View 1: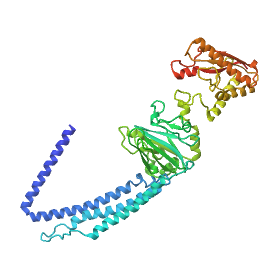
View 2: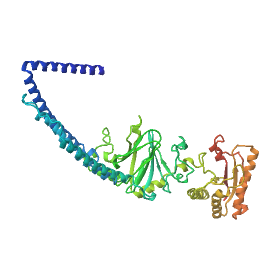
View 3: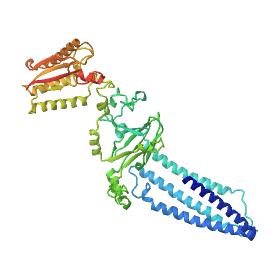
Length: 505
């Protein structure tokens, strides 16, 4: 029905236009062609002047009315160091463009009035060309254009300046339909290598090369996590894409760069206002003290709900809108605290799984330190517990054996076993059993023998560290006490373990 009504309106308008044309022809015949033409010229000239004035008034009024909603005016000034120069360049461009716009607009609509035909016998003067005029409107814009471009290039050079590694904090943004994966370096300050051929959607969506030790402490944020950045620190953003063209755009920081599959790019910038500081500036403006949700008067005020944001500036598909991410700028010490709380992706998702190239081959200093504290706490909790702890077990997570053998891998196992020696020295009345366990691969009798030999070898290590034999015993349980399912690699790995059982304390 709506389409029918719209079609009827269009048809009616067409009929009205045709009838007006016929009335004009009839009027010309009655009044005379010359009189009608003079009247039409006057009318068109007056309409041109009125439109010129109204249009200029509307343009300037709307610009003034919305000035606080547009960057870089009102409260929306730059939040980055180089952004002030970008804003200055935009302002200069706007001033020049406004001057040219006003002049050309006035001439465009004033000329039809000034040079309208008033005397049919008066002829227009025709110039074939004017070399001086041509030179002026070619050379002047060229000079202005070159000055603006040279300033723009100078600003861009700041974003791509070569820097030493210790001069900046580098993060990586990888765009895909429809999100960004953000990667931070760990304690080493370096991002590890990645290779698209290593991408596994379920376990390694970025294709990070876990053989590169620099990648092992890298932090990968989830799709909804805030991107946290420190104030007054130089940030280098490495930008890539996995599928189509995206664009990494931080409007409040005046930086934008396309994310192109197969062609890594980057830029650098320095945030100079924390999110809290920017909110306080917004707070001074009446329009930012209105509810953030117009339908809910009790919702936070606009300035309270404000967040810096990362937006994709390319129309990358139907889910384009979901590329938005919140960016939070904080003081440097707050950033350092936040970063320490983040867990390395390798530690929480890869370590000890089938995808771990270092499993059973190497322990890292951070792991050794953390495991020592964890083991000491486990023992302390047991020793101070008021419950009966006899028979309780502690899994020795870092005790390893050669593949298919009972031989102890002393190079890797010494850290865990030396911790046990230290703990046994602290609790001289503690008696423990070394318990060996296997998965169900192979013959049950063979597994039982393997578990007994492994437990015995672990005990021999403790004996070699002057722990009394009267405090130790060793026993194998084979495959009889699984912790996980023997149907999966991870489950079988859990089942191949050495434990400490409390015999008496």
